[in-house]
Image (tube, one colour):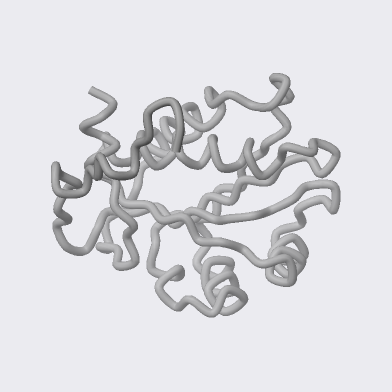
Length: 163
């Protein structure tokens, strides 16, 4: 059930030292590539970072030490010519989040500022025609998380026909 996986999804900043398998990463990337894209452009590529030195450098660039502890960092990069690259990356990222939650794996949307994106592109050899808006650390949560529940659903934020 998709809603169950959505409710399980939490932002994780502390990761257990448990490895994430290649098969699991492939599942996440399949979910990402099955995401809709503007005009079916499918311009988003994904960089999978497992190398510790690269994760350490990304953590320094982002000024977020916890990033180095994630077993994997996935970086969506979309075509700069696609005017909807932010939306395409966001939808693909959400698919990764939901599939990861289904697998019991933790993720996080970490915004990448333009000046950080320049440094990450240089570090990883990402072409200049690819835009980066976020990165996704992937790993098993260090501690058990509580899923969203009825208290997180707010009917006051729903408006019928008009505001």
